[in-house]
Image (tube, rainbow, N blue to C red; front, side, top):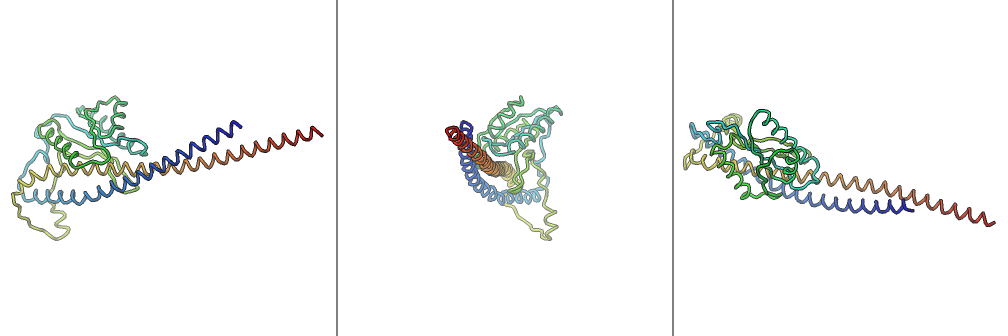
Length: 293
């Protein structure tokens, strides 16, 4: 009888877990849809800014900027920003990002390069504390990064980079490729990758437009380069949020299915135990009746 009560309690607990994970799956699905729409809508803007920078760089002969070419003198120090989540239950999301970050940080240590480590997400703070790696700053961005908040972070990075505090600033985060594929990657934010001239795209299309810039291309680049950095950082945060929510949605769906499967197994065990108890009681009744004859 005690075994039957125990199985019945476990069945109730499993049903409760299944309801919770199903609810979390539905919430993650709604957040994923919203985050994906936001990330997809910002991509054309980022592509337009990139194209404008390329066109302006083509017209600005011998334009030089530390944001592109890098510092004149190396100081042997980098800033690494790791973007992870504040909450768990999102599958391998945090594990993949933090493992990539740990490997890169250890590589910097082996090469004798100093670094400052900043983290967006409380899970990263706990992980690096466990690894005995100091985190200089925890960024509170949340799962709905705004342009204002990210723009302030990017402006601070630009100021510190231009002052010569760092040789490079890198981001380690999850890049959203598709609903079935998310990749943890390291991306260089500063100095920016070579903007190029766009000649390859013009030659492939056979169309070579000519632009007149007002104000001058140099003045435009002075305004566009910081804007490009802010946009790139915002896109990294947006794709990280999309990846987190879809991996949480998948994890909660799997947890719900496992709970239902385990509940079915427990139900079979309960039925067998109940049948065994009934058989035992019938045997006792029959044996007692036979003893009275």
